Image 1 (tube, rainbow, N blue to C red):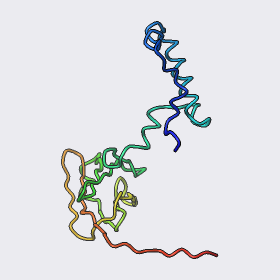
Image 2: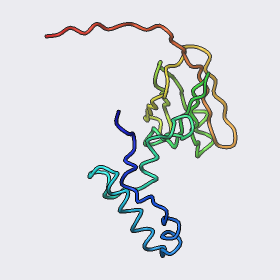
Image 3: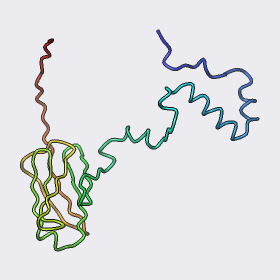
Image 4: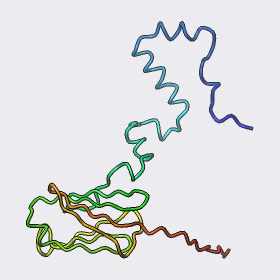
Length: 160
């Protein structure tokens, strides 16, 4: 059985505490970068930004995703609903806009201009009925119930 982590590259010995307390901050940085360079694959060493690395681990529930070029919108989901919040710059837009949705997209028409049609991809499949839209403090919030589809279809793989 292979060890999961290459512990043998760390110089753990009885004098490690003394060595670490005598190191200057610049030396510690160099030491850590050297250890990381030995652990990480070659393509990960250069330009490693911790924020970018952690961005891939964030869930769509916790981070809003802007999905429309013309509209300032955020989309997120909870266990039961998909929410789309759209910043409305002018109150008269609320009277002229039209909202539709498919099972995976929200369509907002007539804002900011009469001929505009904005498509916002939803993070989950939603039900046909039960959607509501409310406007408050310059934000239009669309709430659509999620469609929980527990039916699975098996796909057979054939060799060619």
